[in-house]
Structure formats: C-alpha cells, structure tokens
Image (cartoon, rainbow, N blue to C red):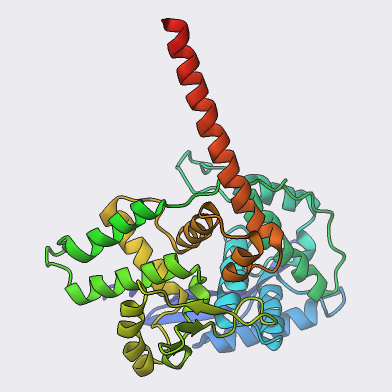
Length: 369
C-alpha cells in the first residue's frame, strides 16, 4: 500500500479534507442546532464549498445577512478594496489581523456565537505570554487589540447586520519610545558596509548587497520616510538637480511631501536612481526594509533595528538639534503636531532622568565624604 500524501491546504472555510483510497477529497461541514451536517465527497474544494453555501442558505433560520467569521472578514476586506486602499494597507491592517482572529475562532464559526463573554476571553487570552500548556508565546499588545483587532471584529458585526456585543477594550499603553543616537547608527551602517559576514552556508555576503542594504537603511534614517512610502518611490521621483525626492502617495494624501537630498545622501540617491528607473519601485517595498532589518538585527545583535525606530531616530535627532516643532512635523508627514510632540516629551523626559541620576550620584558622593 502506497504512502498517503500530505493533506492539501484548505482554501475555503467550512470544508474539510478526507482520504478517499487513492486521493484526498473534500466535503462540506456545518453545525446547526447542535447537529453536524456533512456533505457528499467532492473532487475539488470549489465543489465542496458550493455545497457548504447551499447548506447554509437552506438551513439558516436567521436573516440571510448572518455570516460566519471567515466570510465576514473576507467581506470586510472586499469593502476595503472597493475604497481603493493600497495593497500594503490591506495586508497589514485587514489580512494580518483577520488571520490573528481566525487563530482563536474557526472560519466557519457563526458570528452569533461570539458574544461579550467570548470577546472577553479573546482579550484575556491574547494578552497572556504563555499558552495553556505552559509554552512561551508572544502576547498581544493592548494597543494592537484596541486599535486593530477589536475594530475589525466590530466591522464584521456591522457588515453582517448584527448587533455589536458590548466590548470593554483594554486601556491604551504608552510604549517606551526607542531610538538610535546618530553615532550608534553610523557605527552600525559602517559595520554593514565594511565587515565580512557569511550566510548560513558559510559563504561571504556580497559587497553589492551589503552596500544596497546600508543605503536603504541610511535613506530611512536621514529622511524619516515611512517604509511603506519608500516602497512607492520610483526613479522619476528622485530629482538630483533640485536635490529632493517626491513621496508618491504619502499617508496624508492631502499634504504632498518631498525629502531633501543632503550632501551625504547624494551618492546614495545617485546609486539608487538607476536601479529604481529599471525596477520602477524598490523590490518588495515595505517588506524590503522589514526583511533587511530582520536580516541584520540578528547579525549585528541589535534588537532595536527596525524601520520604525530608524524613523524615530530621525525625528529625535531633528528635535535635539533645535529644529522647530512644526518644521519636524512637516518632515515626518504627521497630520497632527501632537504626534511630533510625543518625541519632544520623550527627549525632555530623558534629559530630566539623566539630570536626576547625576544629582543622586553627586549627592551620594558628597555624603560619603
């Protein structure tokens, strides 16, 4: 008897694979009124999913708008696509958080089953740093739950035409603002460019790749451009004569942004322009910066290395140098000056903490004498 092949990946909610002597087949499943309804075996997932849709239409006693969790999330994503949102926003804001919700509820779970008690369980369970078996896991941030996961769940109820359960969202937590000093960042980029690193096979990494990685990281750190915005810049947006880079489709589309090409950035812009002319956009866009940071975070043993923290470093460097708050707001592309003011408060808090530590040190030293 031949070895059974690996079970294929399911592409539709509400169906399951079953071994049929020589090949995998598919069948529809639905649980209603405490009973499990099983459809006939089909050769394709599409046919089984069509059975599932027919079963649902025939069996539902509630209004036709009632959807399962998986269907509701797909409906929310379809509605977001119709609004013309960028693909990276769709993937990051909707698909990623929809996938996270489906790790707690199966796609075929009816929305009517998810009440306030279920949501309280979800909020509590997602913030735990260990699972039921005691294994370590990554806890969900209260900010992510409040700003991403729970709004998506609310939207699922809205689009299904169901009353939204009362949701007591966790309190927002002000995260610690992390950033690099410019001397630290210069040392990291210098290591990427000049030290010899090897891949998992022991082969030295190519100098051209290391140079390009350092160029992109320096561009983010010296202009404060968002990684997603960098992914939409092409060669025509780099104007070496005027010394500026046009940000294509910035986050605040009502406010066009231009990045200044300083003398230190001119060689980098000159190297990137031919590549962008040929490839139209930075290959991979936002994911390129994320992957580069993930790649070098391990090799440089620097856990802070990320596109967001490089952007924070640019902002704090501008404010520490005495740049006006409204000017830094324009450079960062913030819609509100309050977003920029967070960085100023963090700098003032850091200075006050350093002064308090010095006072404590010298007072302790004086009393010891």
